[in-house]
Length: 117
Length: 117
Image (cartoon, rainbow over all chains, first blue to last red):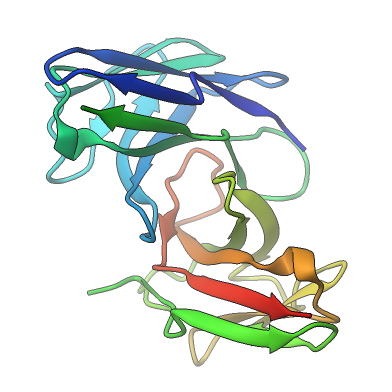
């Protein structure tokens, strides 16, 4: 299957700092990528849709100025958590739909665990 | 209203037994796709199986099969001959609209499956 990577896999930062998370499609191009966050023992909640070459589409209730998304190329989307606070601590996971094949699905990155002190 | 409902927060099953994980969905769109993902403790999301709303036959992938009952709007996952490695969180998910790999996927709350030796 298609491979999606994320970097870093985990990060610990102080409150008030900004953290950038990268999502890369390694062997395919993705004009669209999706960013989710997952709190412990909960489901994945879609935060935003990242669109290559245009602005991201945010889900209701997600602050676009706090969670900056940039889709710089067909293989890279970044999520920047600005002025992070402890309540932003979560598991952030990206996904990308894979072109080709006979299965309509999306492939997920391994996730990034953010801890804000 | 919830689009995806998984009524079993947790299940315990004896190794080698078959297990059925329930999923019901809600949509008025005649075209949609249904997915099952597995999330082990490592956090990665592993794609298991896909069913399109117009697919005539139930999807199967190895030990996984999807019991698709369109009129009841249910898409239960059946795992045959369960193994200890099947212990994980399982998410049912849906994409609304015609098959387009750029569309977002919405997740249910998940079912935590424990396989007992």
